[in-house]
Length: 319
Image (tube, rainbow, N blue to C red):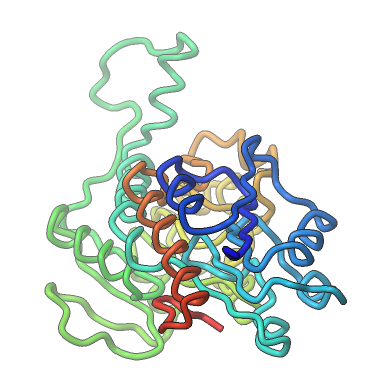
């Protein structure tokens, strides 16, 4: 008998069709998030779970007494939605979908970079609200990127690719904070092991670190205060790596120039005082949201499941 797979959210049609060829599949056609009880039921009735980053799979859910599931295939790179320690302890395989979403996420980081440094949101709202008075030589001026310094926090695949684009497409100087120097870069970049120094020296700061307990509020209130008043802040990684309240206060008080955010601490809830600011561009976690990328991610998740049940090497095993 084919293994039973429960899919917790709506996924691309092409992936669903392929899953149905290979497995007994329960699909989530209405795309409503599973609550705690439904996730526990999935653990009890499926051989494998295909979940997303919005599913909070806790120790309690993993350790349900009648668990049948042997593998969780996460549709996404980050796995901070899953208690990995509990998974390892209970011999539950966890996989993810890396590599294929790098350029799509860099595209969104680029969109935010251009939007915040050229006041795009505020300019568009002036038109939409009928407040634009016509062309001006002095109003609503932005900042040139050429020759400015971008500080990259985290030089993994996405951070490195965005740094390359900022340097080669826009002529920006690159500083980066990483646990160790990155070798074989295709562009000039200088490492800063002191994060405060990077914050102080950068005209734009872009965050590309993973989530998890070690990185929660990694960019704390004190660290955020190191940002120049004229500088901009971009985050396309995870919302909980930044002290969101402290960042909002800096933006409200014009202690930094602006921010572009694709991720938030309590998604999908974004605080009113952040949503209403004119000096931010806010996107609803769409870093990987292209048809091509989501299909590739889905196929990676499917291949992880297939490898597990065929007892071959799992391509993207995390636990």
